[in-house]
Length: 217
Image 1 (spheres, one colour):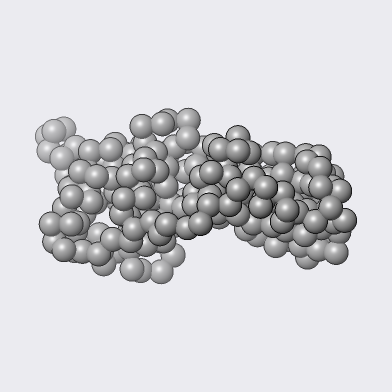
Image 2: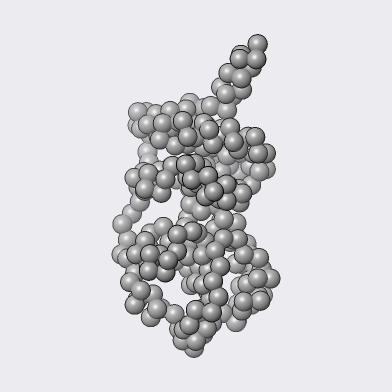
């Protein structure tokens, strides 16, 4: 009886490709890719977050910024990592569902994927030239698939509303600008760097409070 109950619970959180596709097109849902960034760039579903299940500290940090009031639809390459991630999420207060068979199953049913678009890399010289020496500049190095980056959006909006006249916000897509991230020694998103008179004066990675930003300014 216990075995049957466990199997039943696993089936309830495991969705076929048609079920998963229908679910992720609903309002107020979150889609989570638990593969590596390299796998993500080879092809992914639209409007997804990324948290590598094989890197537990990274995974835990990123999913902490997801909304527990909204369902999470999880996928990987074959469905194994995402099944484990789905179980972890459900054990930690989320309502999560796994794509059975992963991206491999998705491709077999000829469903579309989005691929990373090659962009011109910004050199360190070009980056420094984009920072005015007569203004206070807050550089925001984020990624569209980063849950903490998404969580920071309302904080940045509030900061601009309160202190917009005191600084210039300069955003960069760190997932695309890999050369720049390497030069700046950035391997976690979001990373914020505050420049005054062209010099870096303050830097912080991850979630930053409104008061921390105001104090830095």
